[in-house]
Image (tube, rainbow, N blue to C red; front, side, top):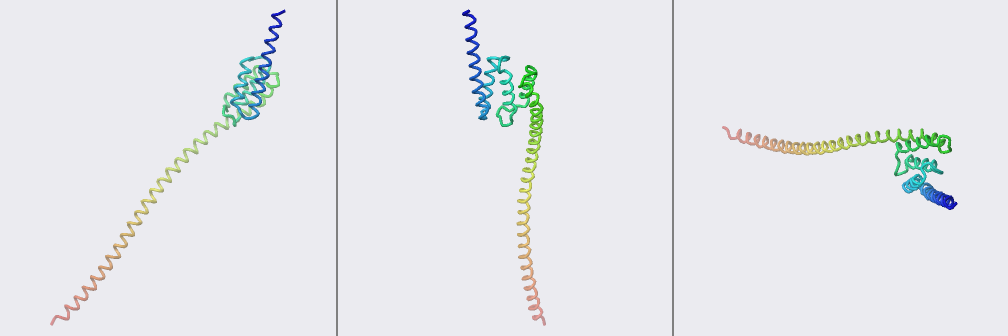
Length: 183
């Protein structure tokens, strides 16, 4: 009789601990503290992997990994956990919910992969744009240097033409003087 009473007390204590862990994990989940929620659900599963509440804890843990806003977001892990819920609790409420959620999680995983690929592509394109912009800047600088060189050459040419015109004028003046001196 004492042994039976002791067993019942231990079972009641474990259930009370599970209920408390569930409440803590659920509050963390609802407030968006997914890391703390995951720890709480793992604690429940550690105490009773197949007992009362294991289906709910496993399902909620899968959701923690499925939510894109969760720092623990991992679609593959969520799929694995949802598959475990379906396999272990096929006729239960959470088994049915897992069957509904699993295709959505799979789609999220596909979209995340696509997003990662597109992000990598966008990063590569941005690198190309940055390199092109750098080359354009270099070309603009070289063009500006050539424009300045051309402006200096034009100024030099204008100065040379003016000197040539003065020399031609002086030469004409000297010719006229020379022609007047001749007998």
